[in-house]
Length: 343
Ligand SMILES: *Cc1c(COP(=O)(O)O)cnc(C)c1O
Image (tube, rainbow, N blue to C red; front, side):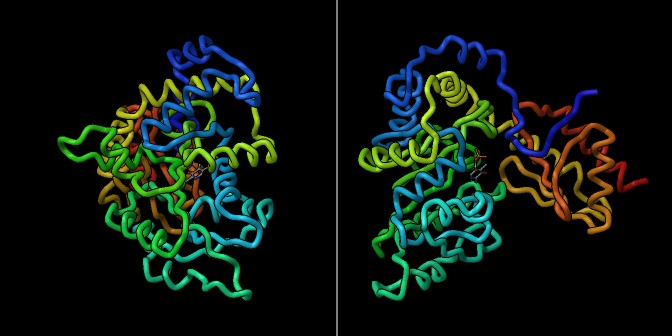
């Protein structure tokens, strides 16, 4: 029986076609700026999203760290959501390695940080305070889409107060595909969602299915400084084009198909609706959350595992659909979950 791994969309393996693209990629030493495949990835993604330049990084964590360190100097601060990856899930790197103070604010249920909280947290120019330099948003956040009106207003507020704006767009293309309006071509949706941000970090290794790598995008001078920080934090890779080729392949072939992952998540949520003892919460992208009684959660994880379905969570189980999960897999998962509650 096939193991269905729903722990994250990071578990995808490169497809045979992606592997072939990786093996065929022309390579060079990227620390010298000589890897043609890395350069193509950086330049083409920057152009696609309307930025001047890009920087290939080993991970999304490092790409966010480099962005924070480039926007903020020692003694500066960034405003960020309590639930944000670049505050909560990156081992405190900005504070530890960057001497940057986070100013975390509670996220609303939809993942936004209310504008009045942002406005109130921006410090005046006074020796008592850290210098507020940056607003960091995340889209998608917890599988949810930030409302676009909100994003536009938050970016305008931040810029109006002299702050820069960074988007942790680890799953930016999930947001894009879920936001596409009828009659809108994908690139228009991409440009609409990214408008106004000074930098964005995009993971190639999640739903897009590449084995590794993230790209940081921004202005030319920003990326030049970011390249220096990347070297310092140990992210200068040599023939990194092997990885970048997987990313290029993914950007060409795996963006539109994210709609399949979203449809599979929706199918899973619908198949589980109304199961007694189970509360299902699904956003418009590729994540389904199962809220169960505390004493049941571990037993459910074990039950799933015995049926070769992998999930994570303590009180809330997170099931993530991706490239290596089919519609039939999702049906099987729904049966296995139902069986737990119906026994
Ligand atoms: C996964 C993720 C990251 C970090 O990416 P890694 O490649 O795992 O370091 C950053 N931000 C968000 C929102 C993520 O989901």
